Image (tube, rainbow, N blue to C red; front, side):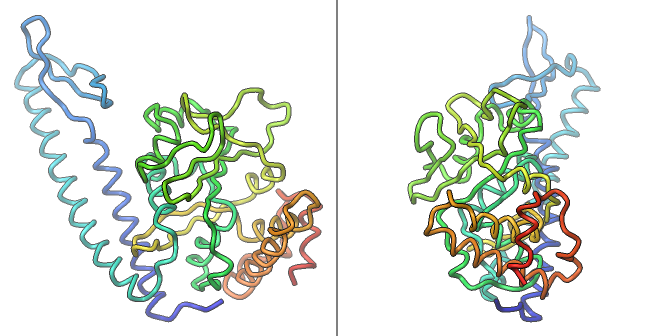
Length: 328
């Protein structure tokens, strides 16, 4: 792996700070997504606040000095929020050009768009990026780049915490499910098969929705809407789900920041090493699993020394923790 230069470190930090301002401005602007309007009811005008694209909402009262003031304040607030968001976006676009020139741009743009859509929908904390794509977050957190051979992958796995209420997530997805959100990122996304866990776009980049095994916990499938992806249960993911998370802001191919929530890198390395030892694992994937495990373990020791492997993560199964000697 190659450590960041001082200039790369500077602009990585600048990107993180700018993006935090952008997220705040974007979330504030969301308040004004659905507008206010006058609505005639039985010959009388009422101020109506929409709450969705279908025109559902609630009345704020009949037309009066007070409701006219409400509408004026709303319109002024929306204009101010949009102007602030535009100014910050312009700053990010300039930063993106610098990030590309410094070769900080790493995350495939389709992954970045999906993750930013999840973030904008208020779902950043509900999905964890696992598998190969998590390495981009570890790079950003540590300030070093892995060799490209470790990173190449045509899919991303999104681990959903099925212990959370599906209805809350479904509401944030506007009733269109995860597939509807994927289509916002790239309109060519479609489910690979009916009742499947995988969607792919026209470029054959795949997004998998996965959950930890439910055991006796639940008999219902994890899905967020009709004709949406249905999560696949994958053995061993309960250990990643219960491990601490790492939050990082990586940089995508276009130079734009992207928020990433991934498992603790120590848990990732140990889990990948364990996965490489499983008889059921595809033979072609085992060497790559172990190479990624070793690379992430080295990254932790060299660049994230505050994360001690010796403080074995209690969320991991004993068979997983036993992999530690193999990573030294």
